[in-house]
Length: 185
Image (cartoon, helix red, strand yellow):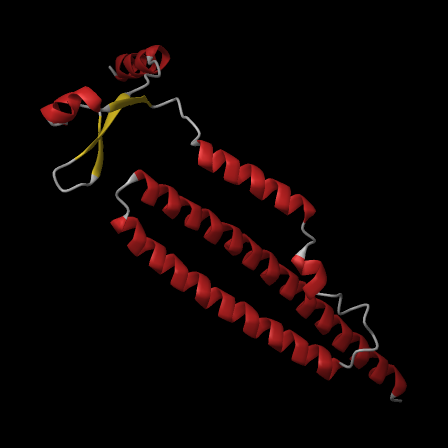
């Protein structure tokens, strides 16, 4: 009996086919943009001008495409911020341990402030998302989200560089402690 159930299950899995769905976009009575796969849910007054979409296809908005191209060009030509802000602590033996510690503390403070700013902006964008109703507002919202994501990526890189600096600082301390141990009889 169980064999029959398994055979039926395998038959369904073998003969199942991917289906693409068509859906429709319209504006409801409150001005909210809605999507549905049932044309009967679209108000009759809007049926003549609704847009239908096929799930597996997408079109790039020209403004977004242009913005992405401009972003790619500026990223290629701009020098890396981390290279300028985080010199290697291990190779800088002239810098005292106290100065290196102070610099790491300052960088940590900057990272913490940047985190709070990103967190606040994320909360603000969540509120803006609720209010975005027109296409222009949605495009502007998406640009802000992209900008926030880029700054979040830069924040993560800065955090990794900070961790590398802390590791280098700890290595210098261990090296100095080892030298002191060798000098004491």
